[in-house]
Amino acid sequence: MHNSGKKAVSRVLIAVVVVVIVLIAGIGAYYALTISRSSTTTSSSSSSSSISSSTSSKSSPNTLVVEEGTQPDSLDPAVEFTTPGNEITSNIYQGLVAPSLTVSNGYIGELASSWTSSANQMQWNFTLRNGVTFSNGDPFNAYVMWYSLYRTIVMNQAPAFILEQNFANFTDTPALAAILNSINYTSPSSANLTVMENPSQSFEVINQSEIALNLGYGYNGNVSYSALLATLTAPSSFAVDPKVVLQNGGVVANEKNTWMETNAIGTGFYLCNSGCWINSESVTLTKNANYWADNLSTSELNYAIQPATLQTIVIYYKSVTSTIADLKSGAAQIIGAPDTSEISSVQSVESIPGVNVTILPIEFGSAEAAYYIYMNPFINSQFNSTLVREAISYAIDYSGIISAVFGGDAQTWIGPVPPGFPNYNQSTSGLISHNYNATLAAELLNEAGYASTLPNGTKLAGSTFPTLNFVYCSDLVSESNAEPYIQSELSAIGIKINPVELTFDDYTSYLFTPTPSANTTNGFGIGYYSEDYFASQDYVTALANSENNYTGAPVIFANESMFATNAATANNSATLIQAYQNVTKTMYNGYVLDWLYVPDFLAVNANNVAGIYAPNPTGSCAGYFMYYNTVHYT
Image 1 (tube, rainbow, N blue to C red):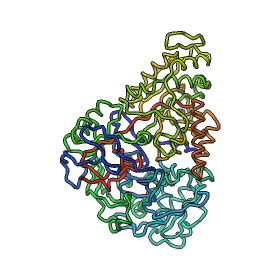
Image 2: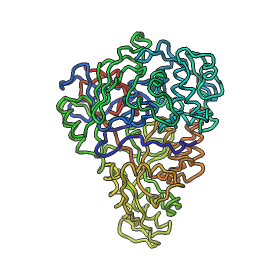
Image 3: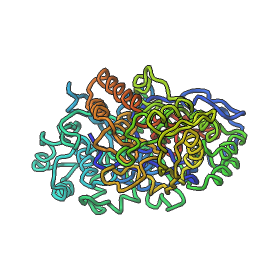
Image 4: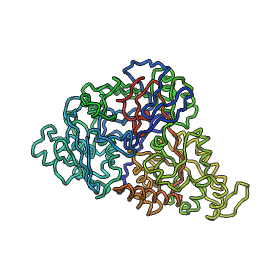
């Protein structure tokens, strides 16, 4: 199981634009906004972050103003691979399923009304809703869904690997592109149907209202995938209008469609009309007056397909200072929350009357970034010693760093499943986070043959531990602030490090480069991971599978990788949980990665904003909900 080297940088975490959160929507439960940090308000329910407000919005009652730090990378769901893009596409386009509001690791139908799977979970059949149309009136059907899924694979852009794990077929993608461009998706010919109804392919049309997804054609091999439904909530699986695409350049193998990059016509409750995206400034979403679900009864609706309440959503992209000022003046009702490591900015927001600042459940912080220290023995041979790795794990004062860097707004964790994600508690059952113990750390280092120093100043004789480069990202506030503490704590026991600062782009490129091709002496440093779609398996595959073997997440034990694969291919919960427990214990007992911290994430909105549903942490750029259709004023 691997991702073919296509790990994405899942969000922008640059210090001055830390309001960006998570990428790629996925699974999850209905998350309450439970812990208020504001002295003036308290969250009243798990379905809304609103309270009656003393703040008067300066926008019209039908307009919501949101302000964030980073604009979309694209409006094409087959291309966009950062949270700001996902925020837009998730409100314009729709996929087969959406995360459940009430069931952890559960799903509800979006464009699909129901679905079934075979006993071995290799075949999934989806029955589609009737009467669905794009905003221009073009019909949606199984032919369109077939086209949309294959289009993502043929274009082969950054998020394509999410589908390619399990799906693919045609090796001649230019030929498939020509086929995609030739079919009449409203009234397909017999020849067209012969192609789409071929059972020996990944995506198989059963009839106009039913499509089958057949696993086994992707690079995972002929196996099931435990996180399949999670992958289908990603924008890479959203339905696009074949007619519109063909009128504007069609599908070209391995290339982006320039028109689709800045224009969007979907089946969703909002529109992004031509010119809606003003580069580096704003995106304006307008209520879809031709929305297919407008005529459904209340009993037929769910939160993911409910018609929009507000007429207009305007999202501006500004600096943190500007967003805080606009929230204070009432010009904005929601802003991207400052990173909790930017303590002064958080305090500035908390001081604004009539604003609710809420600590979100830890899964939101996990989805943004879960941090660890990696020790790569393929680069630095000293880390072949379990004793050295264990010494480092006890040398770090985790609670002290969380207090100093985050003001307490972060948590320790045990990976590779991140806190709050499905099966985290089961995977870590019986384990406790490694605690700071400088005496034990020095003793372990000495047992490994190196000179060390006890906290009382006693010197333990041995070889001098070589000075190693220690990599961190200078653009990430938390890493820049945490590094001096780590340096001091390691030095105290006898490990000297040479700090190496990398910019965000260089850091992520280096971190996710497979070790065999990494010509580097930098085998030690702070790493992080954030999901490409909201599933525990995405973390486990990335951090524990030898076919990735990233520089920043070296796979040391063969069974570590085996357990990761077992989890990925599990088709029942007992097998999945056992595999997660096995991989977690292997990494824990082997001190493979030193799990550092997961920062808390904050939600910030005016008190009179209601209807915010938070089914998963990979939703909108504001960070605590997916869809704007249910948002309204009290």
